[in-house]
Length: 427
Image (tube, rainbow, N blue to C red):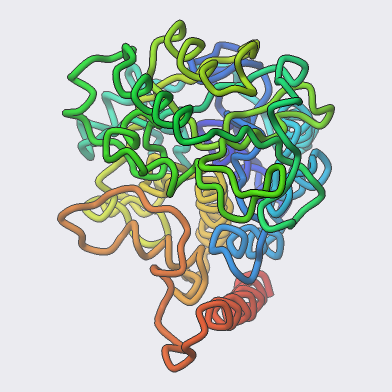
């Protein structure tokens, strides 16, 4: 029986893939006990409805990665399909339905035994996928053996739909794409600059010490972005391009995205924050459409722990000092829910090969999943967590000057390689 420690997306993917291919799995997770990042006893929880990002297969690397995962029989992608909610070009889900689907599949699988306890030591054989909040004796064991790094990221607030002032907002997807899945909160120059000034001066949950820590760029708190310049937000998450209100482009726009299928809750897009709760209400309520907003969840800061993987992991996610011990998920240095799930899925493929006494096959770097696999194992003195992006793919099509066409060609090549990889590994 193969132990899989952790039932987040990575551990769930690995356990389910192995079970589907006849391998007996012991899925070990601390739930129903929860960490501060958890809200239910279900497995595979997401922090927000749009955690799975873009669904553009031929123009966005994360969208391409999701399609690679679909073709590799991903549990995460199956769960997303049945819990999907409208979100323009993004893959957004009803979080409760999403995690409930994953939980049902795992708990009812004949090859999976659920062990509800907190793991305290590393197994000699198996998969460790305990996530970015790994703590306690297990964290101590990992740090003692491999060393550990950490950085901080943040999540955005959620407001109730009925508290949004519709007379000061409008529904539209950027560039007219999608089906009107976003509520847009426009601001004029005076309103925007007052908001930015308040954002910068507001009290934070962690003062001063925060700036000394490493913050992953993809989860930069909105107040830290604002400090980089008056127009940083206006050219970032608050950009008004592709939107029109009362016949004109607004000076700045905060977009709100559905947090659930019913559309009763909305997430403040790009507003991950480390402000104190009272300050969040005060500052975000300065946006006209949110003047009377009711906050269902405030943004919070998280500590994310990850290995210095180039020194301790191979490209198949196995430990360099023990080829039978694998790691998966964000603790390996892949950043993001989709990337984490993908690492668990591909880890399942590698462990299956090990169980069958067959040689390891790592997907080519022409695929996103293969490029991420090789990134975490490649020598790197300044190793930092990595999102899916076209820049990490193996070269090709440099002569194609049109970026859109080049991404399309890279994506088509990646999907062709994924099909070849799957046939080789499972054939």
